[in-house]
Image (tube, rainbow, N blue to C red):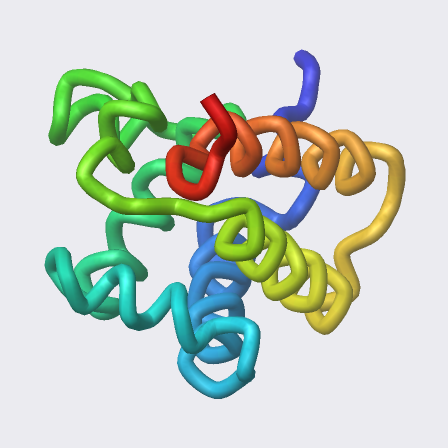
Length: 131
């Protein structure tokens, strides 16, 4: 049986630790200031921590908690109400990269994950674009 990215990072407990550390960074680092602001216009960071875990579990090949709850995993639809700039996306990626590194995640599967996260983050940019 092929291992999922979720399996390779250590399962749901490791994903919970990653999401927790990521949002700790978001709330404490300068790069997270605008991300916090954007979440405060929605349901807030506590809600986002749980939904990020739910989404990332399915995204990494584990249980589809987000899909079970919301019936879709369309990232554009999820973020359609949020004005996201290229800088917001870069800040998110910087902090996720730091969280992955801080927790010792490395290897080809993490390189692929980082690449995939970059593609997704950039398709979410919907503000400050030249038409």
